[in-house]
Image 1 (spheres, rainbow, N blue to C red):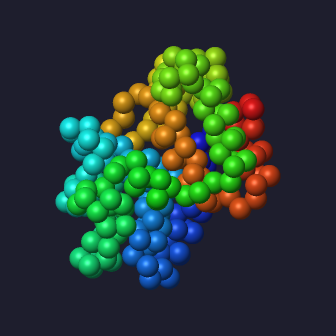
Image 2: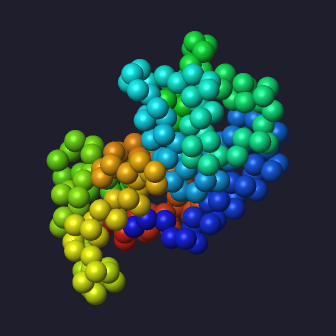
Image 3: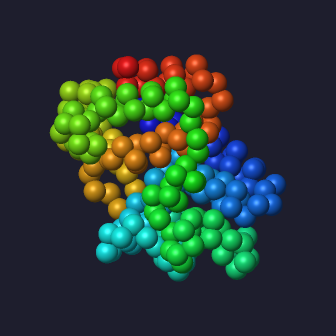
Length: 211
């Protein structure tokens, strides 16, 4: 249900290739973020929100740079002027800080309406309570752990298998045991970049989530 290593490698390969030939600093930044793999956008979203201690939804320039480095982005290819230009692009109201929500809207790869609908359908199937927070309890009866090798050999119980599955969509550093719709969409927006064929994306989502 999550990205295969082959698909994730293709996402990274494409993004790195585009970044090499990109002269616009904002577009280059987007590609380098995508080059972090399917979890790149989700992880930087989580990093930014954790740093937003006062829940204002705003980050200053230094916090922005810290968040980027926290998820492993290499900013050495950018001059100070380039980084300022990138930040200014995200600082839509010219306030000296960026909106985390607006930042994600700009950097998240666009999906076609049909692909967005499939992602929404998959999340709705997981989110039994409709609160846009998928937990281990939501997964029970939806995600079948019986074929998991570590469940079969007795090393993991059902809850451990379900938690490991959630961690696929969660940040590698800041796991909290739940997945929001925003995180789920961020993840599949990146996955979408590695799949050109709409019919294949459709088949993957329907087969993975039983839609």
